[in-house]
Image 1 (cartoon, chains in turn red, purple):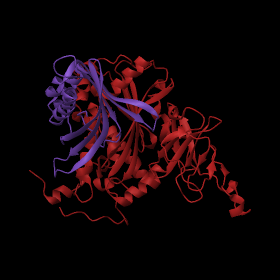
Image 2 (cartoon, rainbow over the protein chains, first blue to last red):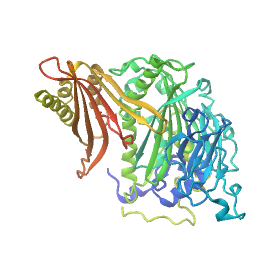
Image 3 (cartoon, chains in turn green, purple):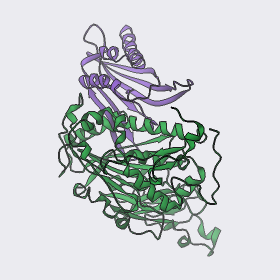
Image 4 (cartoon, rainbow over the protein chains, first blue to last red):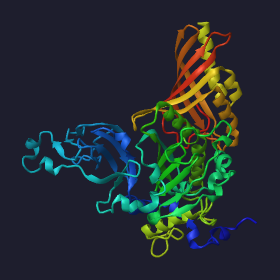
Length: 405
Length: 151
């Protein structure tokens, strides 16, 4: 029997840890709070070291909190990050998304900076500022930066944040044996989808949605070992997923992946989801990295990277690119399905639709269709936000109006 | 000029076939040695990228598998303009501008989905020109939730 309005609004018959109030995906105040409490103090992947291989190479990154960053390799080979904001009149310093800049010069009034964040020239300084303001007063705002876990460049806007190693903890141990050889980015694209960033991370945190993927059903779900894959939860909201042997040849037109990955069992597939919106996805021959950059309560930019080994021969690289494109490229089989699915969630959950609850109730001994990955994420979300994900407006917080049932 | 008209018509027919999801019809316009590629330059990573690379058999399989997948069903309409046709013996290199529009099923709003160039090699040695290869050189890199149907 279909539900009445009262039934629809009634609390789900699950423990409070097993569902969330869908307003956490739509509420503007919660979104603003997330940027402050979740993204600003978290370590976030800005790019990979191969994207700025040489001295003075730089890469721009739109930090999920909204801050525009420059990631630059210095003359001393050290990677540093700065606000891409000129301290003079607040202009953008670098415009192109990547390049090589011995001097970073703001085009507006020609103030220049070096790769260590020092202001090295103020145009007509003496005439205008006499001795009241000097280059030393005009340095760039530096942001904490570390390189690690496969050569990725991580940034943290919180000057007092604990080191990256502490933030990640043991969550990346499962991938550590495969992050030894230097890697190289061969693919980058950004998808903007009208959905909440958490819904994308949810999709990466559960495999029950393999029902949307014909490719995964044929090569994975219907094959031995699939239901043995296990989730492991780690401190700080991170989680990993164990491997199986994907039977690629079961999909028409596909075949066993010839290139593989050093140390990884043929057909192997590991995933690590890092709070609040990063995913490592090592699938047989390619490492994919997702970086979720929320743009609003119902809009997210997802940056996708595909990586191979720096030592690849042209033939090996071509095979990795082919493997990547088959399922993960912009015209690949799986990516479109995942993006379409979260687009559908955004459509059904946007403000005013009277979407009420999202259920994370599956318990299957932490195996592949268990929804423990999401439950673990929302436990951390609740802790950091000081709001229960299942009841985010409890207490004195004003609850937004609901549409009539 | 008659040959140029035939070549232009081949490009336009290929677009119409894909618009109508007449994949069999599209492949009938292609040579047995047909190769299809989608390429794009990324200013972000400063690299050339390949987003799709299939031979004729690969394209057949891709088209066969499409109905088994969950896809957005919004129609895509390709608008091509043939810019140049350069004859080279039994082949011609044809460069066309391409815009792809997507129309939402619900409500019918049309949006520009992608901009690209088609770089086609056309075989002329038979009675009817055939596509020997197509490189879709993308300018657009942000495709929202994307598409299973190539441009």
